[in-house]
Image 1: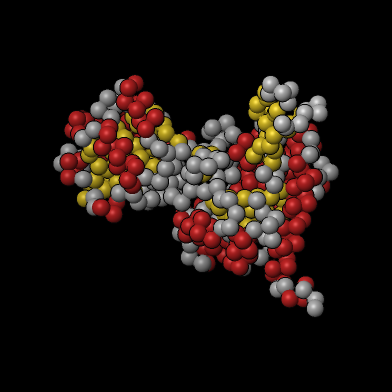
Image 2: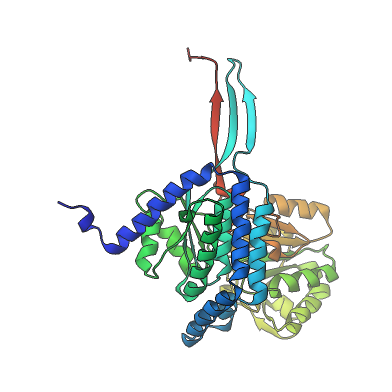
Amino acid sequence: MNVAANVKPLEAQMLALGKAARDAAHELAIASTDRKNAALKAMAAAIRARKHALLEANAHDVARTREAGKPASFIDRLTLTPDRIEAMAKGLEDVAALPDPVGEVMANWQRPNGLDLTRIRVPIGVIGIIYESRPNVTADAGALAMKSGNAAILRGGSDSHDSSSLIVECLQQGLREAGLPEAAIQMVPTAERAAVGMMLAGLGGTVDLIVPRGGKSLVGRVQEEARVPVFAHLEGICHIYVDKAADLDMAVNVITNAKMRRTGVCGAAECLLIHKDVVQSHAPAIVAALRDKACEVHADAAIAAVARDIVPANEADWGHEFLDAVIAAKTVASIDEAMHHIARYGSQHTDCIITNDAEAAARFLNEVDSAIVVHNASTQFADGGEFGFGAEIGIATGKLHARGPVGLEQLTTFKYQVRGSGQTRP
């Protein structure tokens, strides 16, 4: 009986993708830093050289998406411009400039019996990245996976298919020019949902890690169905606590940036907590600044009593990821109540305290159990580039292996090298 004949065409195609990625991962794991950097620079040059073709391909994606009736915020994330294409190319060069984590000695020690032990960073292997409408994720994910010695299988959203396909061609051109295998960065060639399920099942044991980057429904499906490890966050329910020792001008500036710089990113603030002692002095100016930027404020009665243009808050506002020009606001009696609210309604993504009280700041930073905790700065710094990681492949809110922005170092694991001189164990 011919077993291969019983494998469905899509399954056979996906299994072949996984095998090719596994073979490429073996080669990448021992590739020199110079060769990987040469590939990244050649990728950047290819993207710049094909700028007009990328704009044309993206125009097709955008036109289809408009016809499908997708919202303006979705179309904005999908759209490429000359500046965004240049930023994508520059991002590849930025990754090339970062230190290579592969082979880094993490620790070295000797045992009394003379054994020499070294813990070193090594690639994870094959990483499946599943994402939605942003074409730039194609370049970011491919670059970070390759520089950290991993092969990448990319599954972008159907909305960005033409754009992402052409970006992958540019990335593979860079790999070829540097003498690295093209299969180090591959794109799933179908929009069929079944292909995602196959990736989550591990493609016959060839996939080592899944990284989803997208909305709640996508990430939820990945976390529910994956049979391999996952780096992900389900929601970005980010809080800002205005302490009783907060500077008003700082609070206004930080909050308006955290909410309104980009409302659709996972680091956007979704809930504002104000200490009762400063509601009367701080809430009116904070709410007015948000309203000036066309942000709708859903607040409790205490804030509504001192500020204008408030929408009454209800229980559904707490723990809600608006991803829009809307923010919830609540009065709290203490820092303890603020931290309790964050623990109950937050998503362990990014939470902030605004205060000039060093003791309060230290408590918040130490006690709030989120991947990123911030003192006196915008939550929108929750980004790999802002952490100095270069591009990022996503944010992880789990507690095992990686947490926060996932950059080059987080895409490695480690192994132990043990050197002896003939020792045996008694």
